Image (cartoon, rainbow, N blue to C red; front, side):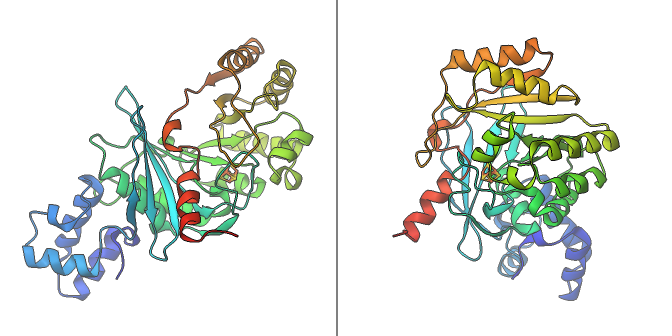
Length: 349
Ligand code: SF4
């Protein structure tokens, strides 16, 4: 049994042909799934009923199962999916008022990076997701939204640039024409990294206009290493050099993500250090007030402190956004749903 996300259109045509089905049936099925967001064969009304039953048994629409899908007051909806080996992964649908639909996808089960403020890294890495498991998240969310998905961000669980081949293949499918893929433009796709330098170099070679987002969270090495142990391996000067090279080669803007942690990285002098650090790059800074994770010692700064930090960056000439917290009431901090579920199923002593 192989789920549909495991097939390109030509692979599905060959698979169908090998069991005596004409290629147009594969095109019909792919269009239902990738264009119309069908989540089951029952919806595919132009296929004969007996064929639908046969295909459902051989080629399930999704390889994963939706376990939970809590909806936030702000309409952000988080999905917990169970993979075929019983592991859990999360993805999020973020509707915007202007009609845009962004989906946030995971790339690994757990995460090896172990950032001190993140629920996903608490239990370490379990494994990489396959290309099909990444695409399954997209299809599951496409099937429940009432408007086309316009943006994809790889900002869920895991470090995308440590699973770069599978992520790259998933992106190719997301950018394939609608009907055999997601029909997205690559400029609508963002890869978010903790700063994996070889991965950034690889990304600079990728086709299209993918966007790169770097989780910085501190302007100096000592604090960044404390918050993100990966900084020991790729310290700030090495990271900045890699970004300079990336920008020189691609000409693309870099976004820095900076989670504001109360009394840790949110002072005005740290804002000034941040201005000095990023001024040499064409970039913008996204400030994100911390989404509380009970297992960590960090807290959310008061709103005025966040605004003052943002104002200091702007005064320094840095394009800055201060993100409105979304989905906080549904444990939208990445990894929390999965963590809760995994611990219920296999409690640690
Ligand atoms: S913030 Fe991202 S890179 Fe860091 S532990 Fe969480 S998922 Fe991994």
